[in-house]
Amino acid sequence: MNSFHNHEFGHKCEQCACEARGLHSWISDSGASAHITTNFGDFLSVEEGDFGDLNTASGVEKITHCGTVVIHHNVYVDNITYVNTNQLYPVLYYKKKGGSSTWLLLLGAFLSQGCTCIASEELMMVKDRNSDVIYTAIHHHDDSRIFHIDTFILRHDAHVSYLAEPDYETWYQHLAHPSDNILHCMSSSPIYVKGLPRIEIPRNHSPCKGCAEGKMPERSFPQSTFKGS
Image 1 (spheres, rainbow, N blue to C red):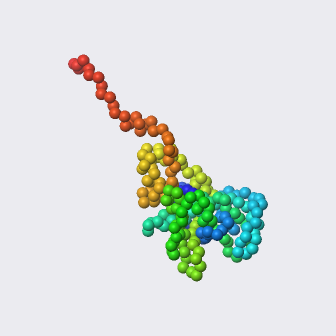
Image 2 (tube, rainbow, N blue to C red):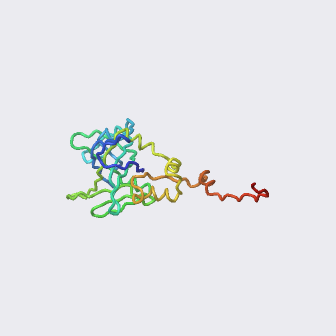
Image 3 (tube, rainbow, N blue to C red):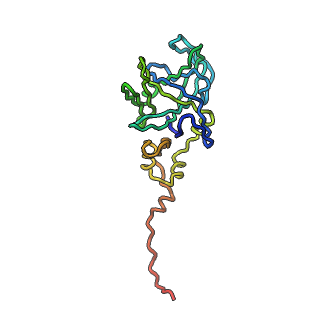
């Protein structure tokens, strides 16, 4: 799960060309069988085929497509709100017969990857192994005990920008050769830099040649036996 864009919902940005499609309310569901959408236009990439049957509230549905969906949503941490982007795979699709569309986010898919879930009456928070928040879901004040994640599905051109996320070396050079510790702090908390993607720092990598040479002490010149005239 990666975060990339840092914009307000519904904006139009010529630089990254990521005009949002509209608000979708996903349900964080601990009892779902998979991530599910009934809106075919959500997919970044999709494969058609026979992916079996799925038991739903309306009956047994035939799963005809499976693919990747990228969602753009708010995350609430310590009274700070920032925007996160998550790539979901696999997401199953079936053609719903009437009624409003359905979006289900399988909580178990995150827990099986070592994530943890903390929930109260108002908020559900899912964190990864590094304690970084993946998503937060809000309880809408009604009779149900359902937690919702209000998201935007980004257009395809925004997906391309998302998938072309720069690697460690690119960020290292772009940010003027900071230390690994600074890079980790910048990318792991919205308190430091809002919207910066999580940067995977290689465990064993060679030091930058320019940084190493710049920090080397210069040896003194040998004493000259000649004097200037």
